Length: 456
Image (tube, rainbow, N blue to C red):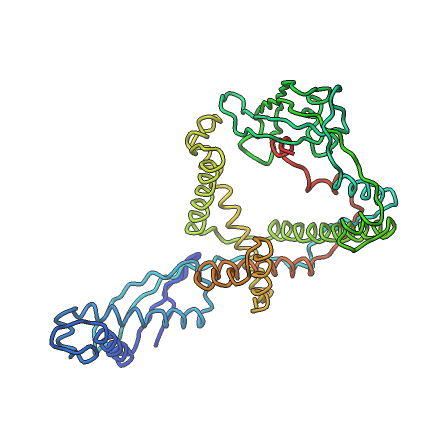
């Protein structure tokens, strides 16, 4: 095989390829044998059909097509290795000569990953929050442990106070709409720091049978864009006021509730402290990982964003949002946009912006993974499958079967594992600056949206 690059423009490479006549003829002969085995022609046994008869029945073009389907993937693999190409799509092929007795001649157009310029990760400075614990923190953890195992008792003859839990039937309606976007029963813990103050204030002092409503103006940067900057009205019908009864922590209860890991108050305090340390170490590590990636993306430059990838990501985001609206809110994308006052043009522009950001981030992380020579081994895939089985609570055998039958899903799993390893590698290479963790930071990840808070 002979090949040469005809042109390289941005992320497209055109390669001219010539295959020796003898090699092409061998592939044609192989194709004839395979077609002869599968063809059903009266008067001839399968596998013993003369070529001239086969050509009369299926045509010479079909024989050449069969030969090319076997030959072209081998050519593509060779070119990928020889020219170190990272493909985004299967190549487009233009055949200029397909005649037996002559070389097979074609031009292949490859859409490849654009150039990504990365900085040395050692030049990136990332802050790592460091958490400290006091005896008071452990005291609060013990109280939290008691609350986890508290019992709720319905009370009569008084209104709700901040230490109570209120059982309600509630609905939430977006301003300008009549149909609630959610309606259900819920237990609302008035003492929860995650509960919005507006909801807490509305329910404090309420008695069973009371109807209470409150309108909340959602923040402009609220993470669910459907409600950002809009008014949401919550309507509550109070079903019960419940008092929380905290249990005494005796040895038997401690042992039962910790599965034998602790059997005294001191052992429980030690256990809870160890759990807090692990949780904060995890948060610190995640902060470094996220910070490192943000710094890498900020400092990197991408030659261009391939339209193929952006359009594909755009379509994927749109489909996911359509499914969410139809399944969770029983509405269409078009109806939702009309109700929320957003034009289709504005939505498409915002969607395009998100797709471009996602593609850029992916290209940068993939380029880093290549530069760092990140590889995925069988043990990595095995570990991920075990985690999936645990999270989904399905037998490991079922996970094996799923990915064994779906090669596309397996490729996606391997890709995700590789990107995870790339992020971990990046975090290990950056310059880390330790800073004291603030009180608000420890709660940041546990903040709940208004509708989720109300559902608690």
